[in-house]
Length: 335
Image (cartoon, rainbow, N blue to C red; front, top):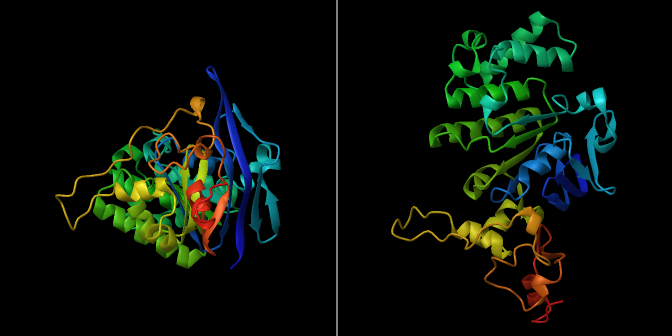
């Protein structure tokens, strides 16, 4: 498969009134064209901050580490995203990379019609004239399942239902035919029937356009239906990654196991839910060692609270950053 994206040693901090906090800590991953990667974890795990880093959309107080490297592989050569500034960012923002945000109402300008916003984007990122941009926008609205697209084109975001706004945002994100689509909790505010339609739509678009998708969610059930690979994040670190089949069927990190155990079971409605005990710590109070050690029920001696675990191979397509995995590999001796 053709490599689309490489993220290496992504570390991001923010300067705040309370001090400097680490939001993302040494995250690395790759994505191929035509592949869907799930990014999962609780709120505050760093998923959205990681995704926004791919377009350098984080706030002005963001500080990237010197060894952070983000490379987007396009037809005319690789693009070093971290070196882009000013107007050069148009190559990726809304061009080669599009993003579906969690809340459409926060993304559409309330006083400008849906259609005018779509046309403006196409004129910025392509050489289309206004007439052609309007035709493409209406066509895309129709393709994402919005009925009477030519009428909806003239409407404002507040005139559309939640599901229709989400579809309009997907249409806008896809109208430039991006190489990479970032979908940040795109189904969270939708009812289950609309969720299923949006998921099916995204699968169809991957097949048709061959784009890569990074799908951000806290719902492992959605990831199981959508993604090829998954990375599990906790407090800014990736703690487990691999193919969806490997991670869902054989979770190796206690955090991933906890997320799966917390899912309700439709086979036994009397089974009580099993939430992960405790709360995710504040980024200002990051625990030493493994970031999950303050909530983990399988702590390995003092090593978990003192040493950051490296990745161990569960299989060729499945890795976990956990001292328990190292202990099991070494026959009981954690290192």
